[in-house]
Amino acid sequence: MARLPRLYFPGCVQHVIQRGINREACFYDEADYKVYLSFLSESAKKYRVAIHAFVLMTNHVHLLATPSDEQGISRLMQALGRRYVQYFNFTYGRTGTLWEGRYKSMLVDSDSYLLTVYRYLELNPVRAGIVAHASEYSWSRYQANVLGKLIQLLTSHALYLRLGKTEEEHQSAYRSLLRGRLPDRQLSEIREATNKGELGNDRFKAQIEVKTGRRAAPLGRGGDSKSVTFREAQR
Image (tube, rainbow, N blue to C red; front, side, top):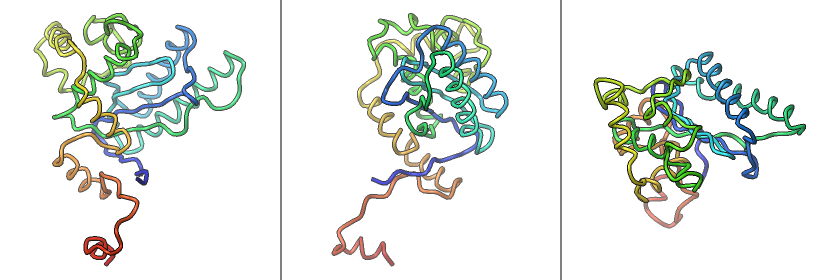
């Protein structure tokens, strides 16, 4: 299956993933996490990207963000990645790249999947066996969404704000949302969507294709040259 060019759609939430090269650690010390978040905050403000959620794992990063223009995410990730690599290499006396190729991103259908992706991010440390409960992990939005810790770089998504009328109601509803584990079906949908570039229903995919003028699903590697369908497609 051919890799699709990234889809860019201003105002649409994106789930962004960046991994360390060869799955090596990107964070060694607590200070590294703090520096990364500081750089993320500065870059998000500069390129006008709203950061709704994040989780910093030992060897990779997940972000849930909405850009204000079509270049917002790419500019943020380039600036953030470059600046953090310079810091990391200087701090640990290393050279070369830190990241595994280009970051991955997918457009998220907010109405149908946003809260699911929130859960996916928050429960990542639990699935990895690092902690027994999301509240025990320091480097995710859970600290703000449920525990009420102020994290300056975060912007609450409108759908999160609909969970209640007050911050206490938001936190209570979100805490309930995170009970239990994410169903295998939803895990598979998110992981498959990471390679396709979008996560949503057929209507959402059609809307993305209309708005961007680009297909939202990858083409196959070919077809049966003897079939009618294949011949018709070549005309």
